[in-house]
Amino acid sequence: MTAEQPNLRAGLAESIAGCEVESAWHWIAALQRFWDVTGQHLEARDWIGRVRGLGDPPATPGVAAGLAAASAILHNSDARDAYDLAAEAARLATGLDDVTKSTAALAVGTAAMWIEPELMLPKLHEALALLGDDHPWDRALTVLMAQRAMYAGIADDEVHEWLTESRALAEAAGSEEDQVHATLAFGQLAWLRGDHDEAALLVAGTLPTLRRLGDQRCAARALYVLGERAYEQGDLAQAERLMASCVEAVVLAGQSFVLVRALEALAAVLFAQGRRGTAAVCDRGTAPRRTKPARTVARPRLTLNFGRGTGSDPCTLRCVSAAVSSLRRRSAATAAAISDGINISISSLERPAARLRAIRTPVIRAPYGTSRPCPAREERLSGLAQGSIAA
Image (cartoon, rainbow, N blue to C red; front, side, top):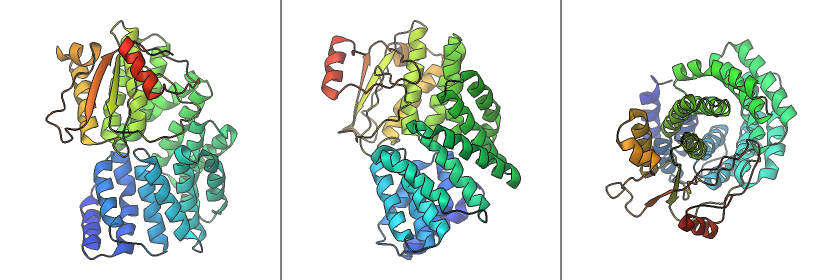
């Protein structure tokens, strides 16, 4: 996949230069998996923006696939834009073949998690219903992606069935990558169901393969589960190493939502070690409203409030990278950057208007499986002024 990137990018650039809207969206679809797995979301968003600037696309299978691919890329950084792209893909797919309509329905179901959560399960069912046994690869990919419903706390039994089918199809096709992704999803489902021993066992087996494949996104998810398990077992040194590696992988993958969770967990581990946790508030305007999954761990002590579309911008990632590098080097800067609060100057960065404030406050861990809303902005600022936020 990596070897073909120069050719794919050259084809995309040529299509844009020639204002060839349909072929440009074809190239977006072809590049999506590489961008997503390797975390090159900033580059992907730039290309997507240039293609969107070409004008209204025709209703063809390639265009619908490209729009669905763009939605998947933007899903973790701009939920509304991702949903709009998926909805456009579904509109253009009307009257086209069932595989194209299934791809568009899957995109809508995935993007609906934050915007229209009640649409998520019906659209996932629609995507699966449109595929028959004569499209095993498309169905394997669809059932694997449909497992995201578990993060919304819905359809556990169906998710288990979907993953079982996905793994069987991957084994039949001899796809190591899809097999390891299905196994990782089984581990995450086991964790959400409360079987943490089984979850850690399944996830640990996937990590070497994910690293060999260069899949930073899924490696981060595996490290997160293993770090949480080490924390539960009282192995704080191992939990710190795993969570620091998780944050580093998430930064490379450009996964802003997972980044928030990983930093929260890392701060909680540091606090449990006796090093005062850090509450970092990144203000970039009004954060987009989005529904949190029912199974998100709510740790209000560490809140990263991202503005629209800035979840993985260079400013945020450099700040996080600096903190992680300091932690991993075990240098004198660790105390300043982690123990005593992340204190990173951004005056020389690309977005001087952005503000980063670091406030030292305790971190309170919530039991996994509970969900509490984050404090309102006024409540949070009031709590920070007093040195704490009410749980």
